Image 1 (cartoon, rainbow, N blue to C red):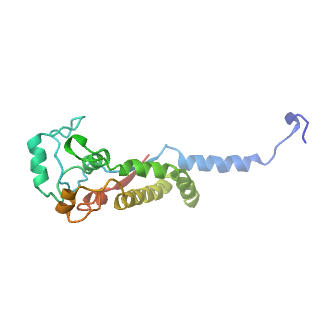
Image 2 (cartoon, rainbow, N blue to C red):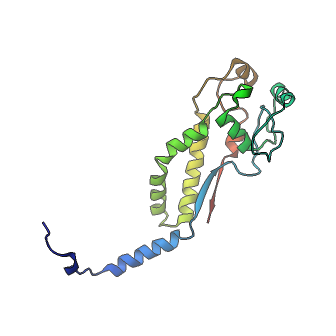
Image 3 (tube, rainbow, N blue to C red):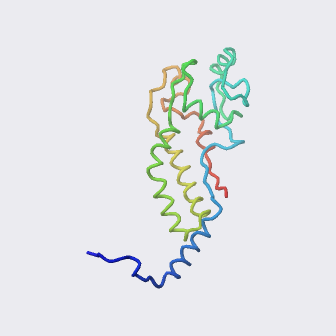
Length: 186
């Protein structure tokens, strides 16, 4: 057991450690970030209601638009993928749409693993943050796609199953899944 004063200890050879850490810090400087999701310009097939005003902070629908949307099948429409994803994730109980929280589940599952994923990617890419985040973004986007493909929430209503021809929630034209992307920004 040590009982002495730490001021009596002299450390040597710290220059190599200092230089190594400084080199790592230089590679991760700039605070790069990875973003995963649905970006501006991405669209998704959708047979749900259209927003009255895409710029509005609250999403509102006119009854006539809801009825028209329910009677149409719009595959590959120009609806923004982020809009479609938010409606599917949060639902619209006023219009009978149950929430299907695929996004929330993806984040909840991922937050437990993303730190380890980043640590491994940094080591693999010799602490080059941009390359490590590119690797992480790709993996995170794949996990989100898998989460949509395997989502097991509230069963679809029979009318929806009849319209789609199958009972898998969140899947209609695969356009929303294909719209998932990632970006690394510094």
